[in-house]
Amino acid sequence: MARMKVYYEFGHKAMHPITMVVSFKIGELNWHKDAIYLPLIAPFQSHMLNEMNLSMAITVLLEDLTIHPTKTNYIGLYLPRIQARYEQLIDIHFIEHFIIRLADVEEVMQADVRRYFPADRSMNRDS
Image 1 (tube, rainbow, N blue to C red):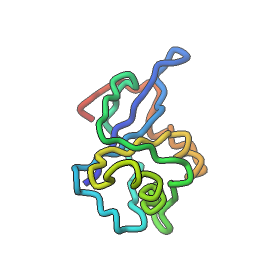
Image 2: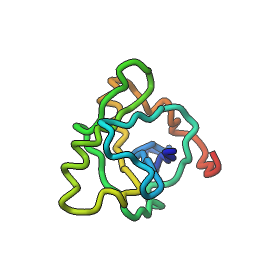
Image 3: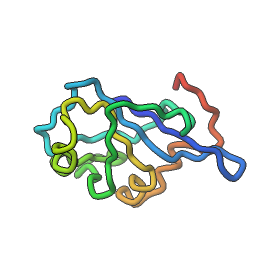
């Protein structure tokens, strides 16, 4: 089961959500699927951007994102495109983390998803 964290940075006298990290256990992700869909339902674990220390992480680009055809507030990751970009560089079966810019999620969802991650939120790591 995917675990999601949101990383914040301090700016303009408040905390702003910048990046979402989706984490899996090694071998947990089924690369034979066309897409995986993740709910954008808070709360997520919150951390400061400078605390990000990930091994076996890859970046998900805007063109890798999609929306669920029938469910609202679900973001999809198109796995064949991600796999094609990285399979010559690393063994994708050892990937543990996807790094996704929240600005890209907003663009795909055509909505302000940052409302799910309030800027004045306390940095509660147990959420």
